[in-house]
Amino acid sequence: GESVGLHLPTLSVQEGDNSIINCAYSNSASDYFIWYKQESGKGPQFIIDIRSNMDKRQGQRVTVLLNKTVKHLSLQIAATQPGDSAVYFCAENIENTGFQKLVFGTGTRLLVSP
Amino acid sequence: EAQVTQNPRYLITVTGKKLTVTCSQNMNHEYMSWYRQDPGLGLRQIYYSMNVEVTDKGDVPEGYKVSRKEKRNFPLILESPSPNQTSLYFCASTYLQLANTGELFFGEGSRLTVL
Image (tube, rainbow over all chains, first blue to last red; front, side, top):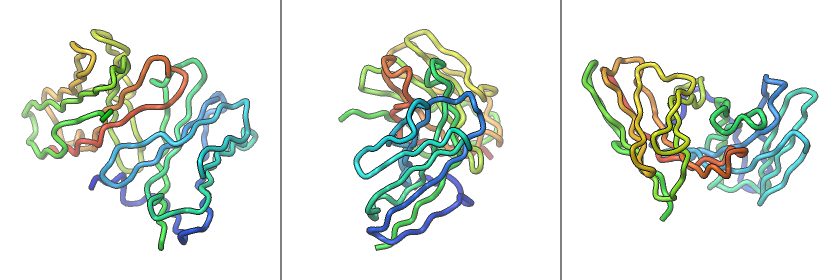
């Protein structure tokens, strides 16, 4: 399948553990953030987003936390499953510039062992 | 099934031989875009289109062309490929109503190698 890259930071967890994937962003004007999941051989898939007027947003088994003070974003996955194994990357945007101005990070590989 | 379809999925070609990577979506999306993905660099936008006959450059348009003659199709054209265009290419689409979100729908990628 298609690979994103050979030298991505990797997080290895056991099935059932909680996973935390981190992302640092550099543009203090960014006010909208997205997490994508990319499984081997597939295109990126939207997971969850958060706007800068929030510091936490929850989805199904996933939570995104935003700390604007230190320009840090994290994705928490509860009760991680083997199917969660993938590359996860964040993207940032500036409000009202549309999705064509998304800036994507390079990603973190999550490996889930049964 | 709602999807974004790219062809070919894999291609090895030689420098200077024109090629086209096709992209088709069946979701009636107005917006379509091409990205390339390289190790250590993340996804970088090549070109995008807000609707039929409306296209604009992304961050790395050099060496590429696009056209949007129909709503569903957005081919990426490499007139004279060079080895630095060896990459993994993704087509993506979405509705214009999602303009303030990043909810893009991606194809499965096209791995291009230029020798």
